[in-house]
Length: 203
Image (cartoon, rainbow, N blue to C red):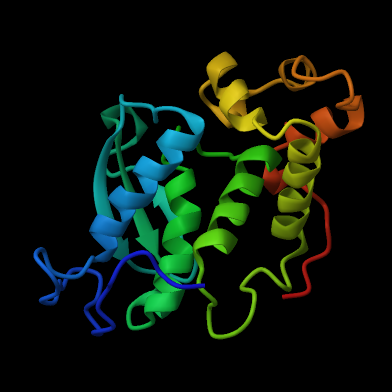
């Protein structure tokens, strides 16, 4: 897949724009803005109560976190240390975490995590030639369940966010209200916290 933007492969790619065309290359910060806008176009406006502070690196697992505590309504994306000098890895992680900025939560459900996995696959451009989630059955399970929903109701995410802006606050009844073909089992599954799944992890 060809990128729709230019981004520096410099080791400090996160914050170093190189000369390119009129405005320079994208950085991770400006790609975040690009992808957040795309997500809002597809699925509706993000929760504007939160101020997005930006991107940083640290630790083994990418995630969003809340400097100063949740009450402050500040949110930042933290990418893993391994992404510091690997632009493909950084973009893969960034795509996933950007989905969680639509309505930040401490405990994402299967439907939200599935959307994040799907978006990271869409935007990954190939990460070292393999799927970062290949040995993480819980993430792939979430994506599969999301796609099962979308096969029935392709515009489900936009429609559901009009009912409840936080995907992780949806109820099975809200999901089933979209289409009578959505089974009770699927709706229940989509509303489970991802961290409560009991699938084996081969990683």
